[in-house]
Amino acid sequence: MKAKQMKHNNVLLIIASLLSVLFGTFHLADDIARGMSPGGLPNLIAVVIWVVWLYGTLVLGERRSGYVIILVGSLLLMGVPVIHLRGPGVGFGTTRSGGFFFIWTLLALGVTALFSVILSARALWEHLPRRTDVQHKQGARA
Image (cartoon, rainbow, N blue to C red; front, side, top):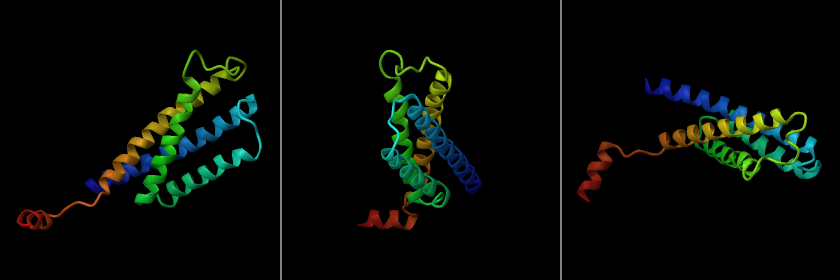
């Protein structure tokens, strides 16, 4: 039963992580289109981060290193809505055409990134080395 639950949680983590990457790319493209973020080579840093994140999700998905990559990427992406939504309004012309999509991607980013943080932290917790009964008894004798 526990193995089945862990497999289910891992599938949810993969889906949430992939959605976070997708929404992150939508958001960066929208930032560039609105002139909030300059286009050009500095955006390749985000591309590299997303490639590492995808590798951690799809190739290292059931390993500790994969969970750490997802956790770090999700924590970084959670900062995007915080940066854009603090203060009065969101500014930068988001009330223009397409403002709904901009706001929606911010909200979707926040939801999927936070969900990925929770699931990856839980997966890391479940993969911590546990002491066996023998180790507990040996520790008590020392």
